[in-house]
Length: 591
Image (cartoon, rainbow, N blue to C red; front, side, top):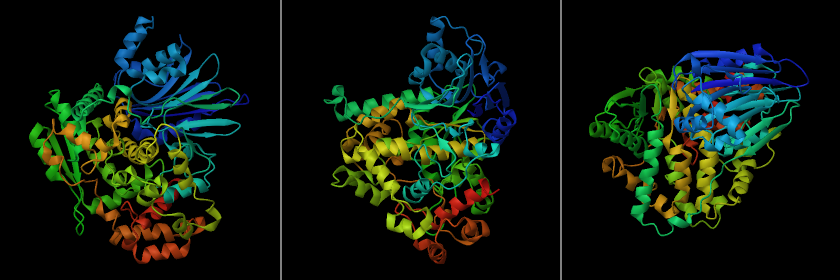
């Protein structure tokens, strides 16, 4: 796991190595073990390394293969690299290292940009072809690894984080009105290629982009999801679906044990992380380290789920770490948490992941985590209403959107209000082929868009801030492709994730399966009080916020007068949503 960056100049200019060094330095927590810079005329790459696979200097990056004329920077992990390496050796390729990085180089030389279709893993990479001058960048199928870029007639820059691009300078930091509408409406999700800033884009998941020497830029998608049941599955019984679910999950979990360092588990005590723990322990990993976090209870909002994680620890005998964080520690860390966000992320459990990651990184460098199960196996409360919906768009928006367009116009400065872009985006996405039922349309949207730019980004940003690699077996592309074929009623029955629950009963105690649905609770950021409320108040009323003028003052004053009266359909604070955006802008743009 690493941080990558680079610059490509056009019109005969030399690359600015100092700008690349600034980007690389900004990403030091993503790769504290080593760093490297390479310049070849108009192209310069930078890399920060976290040593996980092949700990030797032979796997240093940027990796240059002079024989093939290729230079690579890579962030992520290719879990099937041993098999690919053996295949490439059969084609006559010679290797000077033992990890996955060099496998990408050889695979690209052998199969071109289509090599990405052979990779099972999470990745973002850039390759420079010495002889053609072409630069190719790519991102994994579901966007587990990020890749941001800026592009103008003179220069193209890319980096693993948006703040790294800002460090290099020359970025248009004006607010993108379309992105702002998404942020305020679509639960703070800004779909690619946009970000909240006009001058920064992000490479969509499942995309390869080719940058020619003259600056021409071509994007090509190489993966999507089909929600139709396959012909060979039509006669399957419930037991067949259960067995297939366990089979695909066992493979995904096993793949993510590939490492030259120990691999732990973030154990919340819910179905998803408990199943991962159980599947690992099936393979006799008796020394498995597991980690749970909890906060204090506020009112009726319980801040920890230790009683459930304790059940799994007792069952499998893991080496468990129970981490309790009180709000006196959360508040001072909140600004640091916001400082490592590549984009403003409003979910109040960000601080939980941030503090958990800081603690876990004291013990291990790699963890498996349960993100993605709700989106692909049907765990959210808005899926059942979608099953028989006569108006898919209205049903989805009513359950998922933070506010309708009337509410958006009340909140946002009229100069930034254009149209209901978020609703139009969802409508267009639902209309794409490959998902005929409303529930499948909603689950595909969540898997391909919401999941990427909310839970997945949250995990990557917060773990990498602690130099910790997170692996997500539910986002193995084979798992996602399989789950898409599971009939909807087998996903949403019994409160959701029915087929996963039934599969889980064969591995873990039913006590953690039949429990009430939980989440990563941080009550202090849902019900803003005390110092947390004052932090939000200052963020939306200080001079920087007033100069920017994103939000209408009457709306801001209404939220400040009664913050707990204004909670979104998904249980978030409207005040925290606008405060978080201002805090992020004040940290990254105004500083």
